[in-house]
Structure formats: C-alpha cells, structure tokens
Image (cartoon, rainbow, N blue to C red):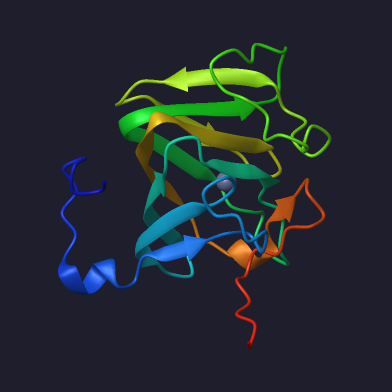
Length: 165
Ligand code: ZN
C-alpha cells in the first residue's frame, strides 16, 4: 500500500514495519502499521497504513517529564481516511468500533482528501479510521514515546507483548 501511494521503501525497510494491535489481538479491526523513517530525541517522521475499515483507537500524547508532549502533524497521502476530533457529532461516513461506544468518545468527523493535513497539540484527543480502500498517511512529530501515550480504552497495551505458547 505504501508503494501504491508512491512512497519509496526499500526491501530491508519492509522488514521493519511495525504491526501494532494495541494488545487487543484483533488487528484488522483495531490496529495500525507503522514505518518509522526517523525517530530521534527531537523529531520523528513515519508512514502509517490503515487497512480497509481498520481503526486506530482514541488516544492523546501527554507531557512526559520535561517534554511538553508530542506535537503531531498528519498528512493524508492515499486512500480513504477520516479523523475524529473534539467537536459536535458529525459522524457519517465512518463507524464506532462495535461494542466500544464508551471508549470512542469523539464523534466530530473530518474526511480527508490526499494533501489535507491536521496538527494535534499535546493532550488533544484523536482517533482515525481507514475507509473502503484503507489509507496511507504521513505523521511528522516531535519525538515519539508511543509506550506513554494515553488511551481511552483501558484494555489497550501500546507495546506489543508476545506470549510464549
Ligand atoms: Zn496521535
């Protein structure tokens, strides 16, 4: 999907794509695929992929010690993408993950076109969802500490745990 979106990604980098299921073990419903191009102690640039109807859960980026929290700009590149932010209920194209009505609190829908971008300040809640074709987007931000993000869903564990069988 990244290559279909025109993003250059080398074969060795494909191996490094992070597949995130938020500890919920139902990737195709709630999850995201992440290619990190750079993440230093000051900045990060990533490509995110959502499969069709896949949802990245509602979250925010808190203050961590001296760091005021992640400031993030996302830019839509390819496919069908909607974001949910604070504001009046305009949810129309997307859907709340069934059974999760209480942990997806934001209902203000923004349908993005390729080239559209949004910026989130620390603590600004958001969640997003791929439409019929899924979506490819950029995420540019200050340094990323995904393990410390806040999530509305208490069942979420951001760092993937592999259990021994
Ligand atoms: Zn975010």
